[in-house]
Length: 93
Image 1 (tube, rainbow, N blue to C red):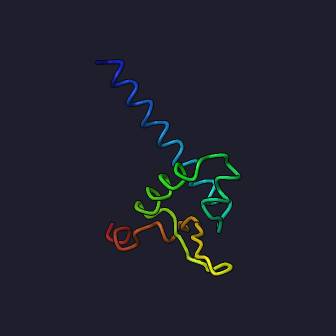
Image 2 (tube, rainbow, N blue to C red):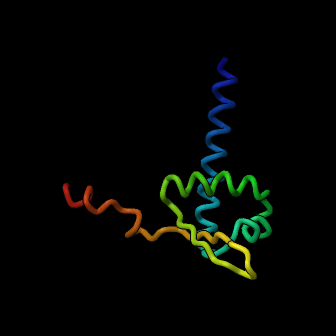
Image 3 (cartoon, rainbow, N blue to C red):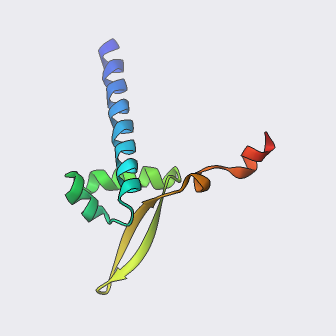
C-alpha cells in the first residue's frame, strides 16, 4: 500500500511539473498554437491539450481565435500578474 501512495505522489508531482513547464513555455512564447508548441517541446498534441485545458480552467492562460487561410486557429498566451490577482479580494485585507 505504501508503494501505491508513493507512486501516486510521484505521478501528481510529475503532472504539476509538466503543467508549470507548459505555463512557463507559453509565458515566454505567447501566441502559439498547440501544433506549434508540440513541435518546439516535442510533446504530443494530446498531452499539450490536456495541460492547456487545465491551465485555461484554472484561469492562468488565455486563448484567442484567429482565422488563417479559412481555418480557425486557437493561440495561447499567459495572463499578466495584474490579471491573475483578484483585486477585490486583495483590497479587503
